[in-house]
Image 1 (tube, rainbow, N blue to C red):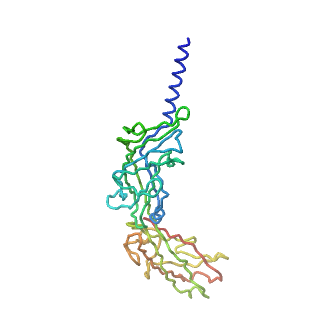
Image 2: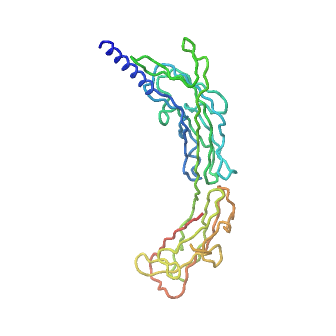
Image 3: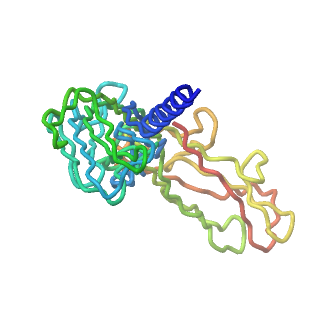
Length: 333
């Protein structure tokens, strides 16, 4: 009976040690980061070190602080560009290591071994983080950009074992001498890092209000000319439509804000009699813009010159007052 009790106690102790070792585990996992979707005009906001991604090495459990953590990695095939799915366009990037000081380059071993007060594993899923910087302006062609690289990790990480004793979790085939010094980092373990950038089409519109001024009679209002300025993403042809307004009846109409009287008016392309509307040929193609037609580099602005005219058909009483209408300018790409 005594032998049986002693045997039971020994088995209990072995199970306790095994459970603790599994709890303090280091693994490498593939990781992914998707930047965006983001407007092509906002891509410069990604030119920072705030785009964090897991470097692929993750350790869980009761890691020992105030001790050395032996870590080394080698990155392979590190991209300096993300490639558009069209195979032609690209986005320049920089990849930084966990402390944002080292630019990661291919095939150069980086030793992160140090005396640890605060754990290095502060990234996603308790991993060592990397950071992505997109070094681009607003001229990126909309679409999806992708890149990938491999990181080979080597580690010797202390963790708390039975009775508070520091034990080590080692990467594959790592070797040490009797003093615990690393004599061979071994074969390491791989992690694949995937990066994706999604850039969306967008446009900037600069349009001023149309003001006919003041006149004693409808027939005395003069035409008003102006120009709408539009800048869209690179390689993004588009059309511009102008709604019929709030009071349409055969023509656009302004309404007296103090009554039910209306003054008809129209808006024409350039100085022609071609109506600027929102359907079919009434829309305005960027390939026929008044200024910089058909230039789609993401920075050049197209201009759309128009002429607005009051229509005096003799059917409208010249009721005193202020007349207004609201139009919607729509860009479709």
